[in-house]
Image (cartoon, rainbow, N blue to C red; front, side, top):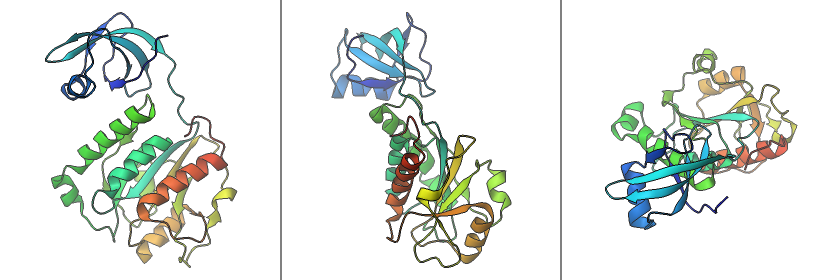
Amino acid sequence: MRTVRHRFFVQDAGAPGTTVALSADESAHATRVLRLRPGAVIGVFDGGGRELVGVVTAVGGRVDVRIDAEIAAVPEPAVAVTLAHAVLKGDKMDGVVRDAVMLGAAAIRPIVTRRSETTLAALERGHRLERWRRVALASAKQCGRAVVPEVLETQAFTPDASWFDALALPAPRLVLAEPDARAVRPTPAVDVPRPGQGRATLVVGPEGGWAPDEIEALEASCVAVTLGPRTLRADAAAVVALAALFAIWRVEGAC
């Protein structure tokens, strides 16, 4: 198999022998940034788990690619973790999405909590969901995943145990406990058993922490987990937690 240096996303990639067109953005990247020419061998992935090799056949207003072969994709983690993360201020959430995809999260659910420094309306006006989905795609493209994890619709967190069931967030549900929280007795991450059903949810709160009634709801629905005595930055906590849990669980296919 010829060496592939560059990968491109094609949602409707065909079978070997067919020709597909790169999107306008991908075509621009291929021609203006990478300066690819006909005959260049590239990788193509469809975001749903297929990895292919193709050859550029035409360069113009768009780039046409002949699909030559389907190859083995990088394995997905054996435990599918949905990250339910409170939206952070500024562009910090971009980094959370980027790194969660890189580490192997199966899906990301942005949430707005009582102490989040934004609102659902503000996020919608800023088209943040579309931006996060672009970040997720770019991260999958860069890290070699053939699956692009879905960034789900942003939801307001309701301090009610049924909230998790309403959003079909898989159990077990783990919430990162704040080091100074006294209302919970967190379980050290090393003592959290590997999910028997191969699915889990990791919940991470906002910069300002959870409100008291939110903590009560979390206690009723989640296992509080601690990563140690240090206070982590809100934009780093999920990265550390995902990496730690995947290592503790010895998850195949995780970063």
